[in-house]
Length: 203
Image (cartoon, rainbow, N blue to C red; front, side, top):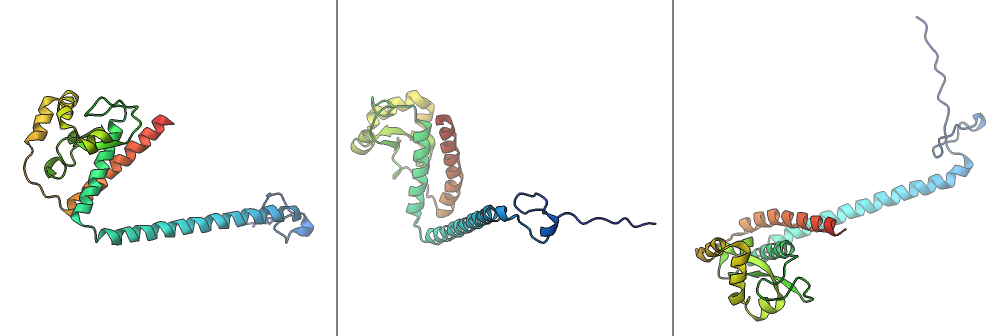
């Protein structure tokens, strides 16, 4: 059996990948390629450093948030859950006017997620989306939700059966921290999906 001799691969420039001259075979870069190659390597190092800094910052932020969450009161968890469902309701109703008055979707003031049955006294439905609808700040803040107008409009929107069901939920429900954490994780994900979908629609 005869052994085949393999000629060594020619040296190529690390930047332009062209073959190096025989008399410069020990070099890895053409003289004119040195500066652009160094610039590229520095840019890579800078990107790697920035990525590492961002990763460390995100990790530190998660750790800080985890530590702070240990000291949250149940009422704080409930408030965060309410904010999530109120925003979901506002996005769901983004093309609607106020549930409690004549204000149309082009109202220039602040929009709220208004509870038909107040959240503080009706824990059983405080996070239920049938119970939360977009309303103008005037009705929600200064007219107590303007329930006299809210109810007939709500019947028209979701049906009398659902409104009657909301009104029948009088049981006392205590939401613990574990429930709020699960709720926030699930509904927070839903909210993020809604935001992304609306952004795509508006793009």
